[in-house]
Image 1: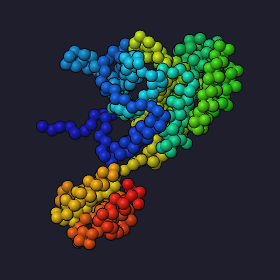
Image 2: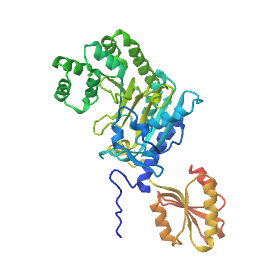
Image 3: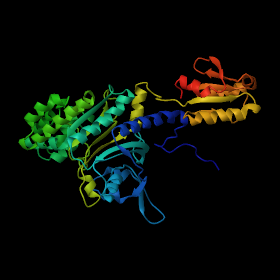
Image 4: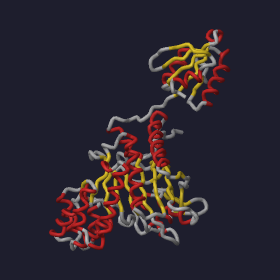
Length: 433
């Protein structure tokens, strides 16, 4: 029988040499989350379909990997994690707020496969539950921006920020009716020419004059604090506090040191049935890739899954598009597979001594490999080079008779004899331990 060895479309085999970069990226995200005080947790990867199908919206329901299990339950691999988090929040009323959670794990959606968009994909979710404040909004955006600062991509990534409620009020105050239909068009503005944008609005019932007005209004963009007075002049009195809030957000992002990555853009809308106020998207500033990820405030969603409303703000980090951005910037791979020390034993008689060295060095927290195939000297050295070993510790009978071992620096090829009991201290002096 012939078995097809190719992976399914949109699902990838990531061997160690490729996975090293993905793992490094996950480590950067995890490190950032923990620095900001987010707590890691372990949610399930399958859930009842009703968590998604009971909501009024959702294109997601058409993309689920859904099935019926042997117990007759309608199950799905999770396409997104927000409903799972909402369920967990509803179950635990004793959690101290703010609840700050993050997690990186796999999601599944049966959708069109494009560059940066897969069917099985890693996603990192950051959320703050139980707090409705500009401080929480600022921290969420700052955490996201900090990830790209750590990656050295802060000059290539921009965050476009808006307030959905502010946009809707400005449209209404300028006499624009059918605001929900209008905002659906605005959400796709960056994908259309001006002519296409105006045509789409008029096809949905707006007059040409109103369509032009919507186009002009949603052109308000730029540094947050530079646009406050323009916003204040266009926003009705009843939402001036939202302008104040946007100003406070801009000031907070300056304090976080990420304001250079953040711009206000009145055309950012995102999911109409999902977000309630703040919305933002991270983009490749040179426009070569789709949105890297997005987020915002969703103060009404958790209440859909239980008996209490819980304000929330968060974002979902896009690993696949970020990897594509690293490739664009010639920053891939982030990390290669490597071994700190390879123990090369010259003969069978010293293998136990080699294993003793390996055990002691592993106890110091470094990556150590030994010969498992009984290779000769040259073959072991070749393998060590293939595994990107930083050092090769050569253990031979003659050296041991002189109370020495040989340390080979693989980058330079230099070798030096050191005392057989000085291996740990020597590596510490070279900052390998």
